[in-house]
Length: 53
Image (cartoon, rainbow, N blue to C red):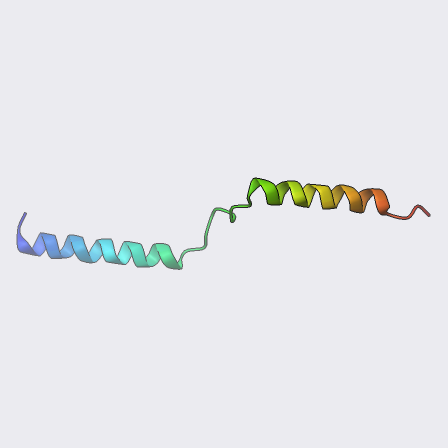
C-alpha cells in the first residue's frame, strides 16, 4: 500500500466515525430488567386506581 492510499484510508475512516457520531441514534436506551418491572408495577397500580365515572 503506498503512502497516499494509507493517508486517504485514514482520512476516510475518521470522516466515517465523525458522521456516525452526528447521525441520530437508532437504538433506544437500555432499560434494566428491574426498572422495567418497576414501570410495569406502576402502570398496573395506576390503571387499577383510576376513578370510575
